[in-house]
Length: 136
Image (tube, one colour):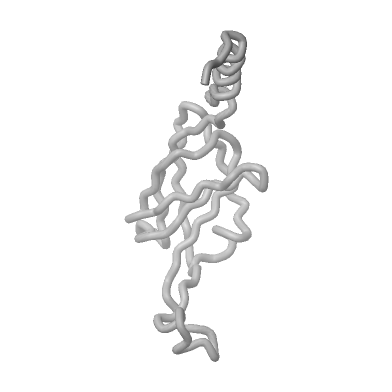
């Protein structure tokens, strides 16, 4: 297949303009910090940085109280969860998938579903955010 010079030039221009990608990508900053639970490092959990419906949320692992990872720049609602195994709901015990019980978030709702914690992630940082979680 032979392309004319004009067709080749148009194809090349399309790729340069349409395939650049760099300017359309959201800027990110690296966030890191520590999460304590009743004064001790949270052994394991998840921390989510959520900007709202139009921007995908970013969830990072918390291990031995620490987390770190890339998050898009902007103001984010922070949600922290930690799971534990509990007995299966009544009538579900022994059913496939419920042999070992179910996972349940054991942190109070004010740290996750009802969170009002907001942090601003900045391009170039510093983006170090520590959180203190209390069960009581």
